[in-house]
Length: 401
Image 1 (tube, rainbow, N blue to C red):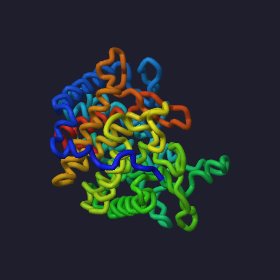
Image 2: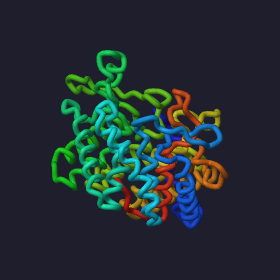
Image 3: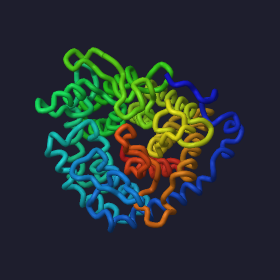
């Protein structure tokens, strides 16, 4: 279990007396958003039709080589830029990537639990902002493929793909496994339900969200990254991690995925249990981060021991708590907003690359997969959620989720 590093839940008693004392003027967030838009525009000629995957030395991008769960995040940034500016250059750049997303739909080995990340930020965004019927059809097709991963025996969406008889070890690892990340993909199902009226979409999303609350959230409001079920019976077995420090620790980005995901489930369904879960996890995240500084990549590890931080976890958390603040009232809303603004200011103080000449991304110091050696890098999902959080801090509420 993870112990609190401070006793209060949100930004402290001082924030209650004067929330503005803990954050800079939101005009600073607008200035940062303007720099993000400029950076994305400037990078179009470098990226071409490629989709950033992870940062390299010198703040350059390495790009996806075929279908990849991160491929939608640059499209998401392009659509946010189009939404903010009305400049059709951004819309065309996103739409020109459509054949790559068609490839995902046409290849069963390329489809997994992250179809919502991929298609909400590409096809659904396109449909919402342009009304393109092909984009709508692709989004619904992706939602049907995501529903097909639902395991009735355990009421969860299967995470990764087993590779089949040629790799028994991989099959044993993947079968029966749900992970925290999938909560972010449920918005695709809720959107498809609104578009079509097909109840399967809503039912699967609601059941997976309920299972996530039941098995991924611990009693102390930290979270498991993974939970394993018996693949045949659906019997719950144990919580584990794949990208965190240890099975009993709390991977920071996993906690962030669940904060944002539960908050969005509440927005889409009105389910008070989803709101309560998001609020509890947000309170715990603030307590673990403490009054200053960035989130470590895993909350079980002290920041003063040289462990990597994860700017992407901070960006997702910031976007999630600001989303939650819009649904909260009174003191909770005030504290959530102050917490989200402080996280954004921490990113601007320690990770902002939008003032760095030659940098191709927006944020430094992302931790993609520390156990695999992928740390201290630009990450396209950190960049996307950074822009989303900045927009939420400025009062925007219409997104692609």
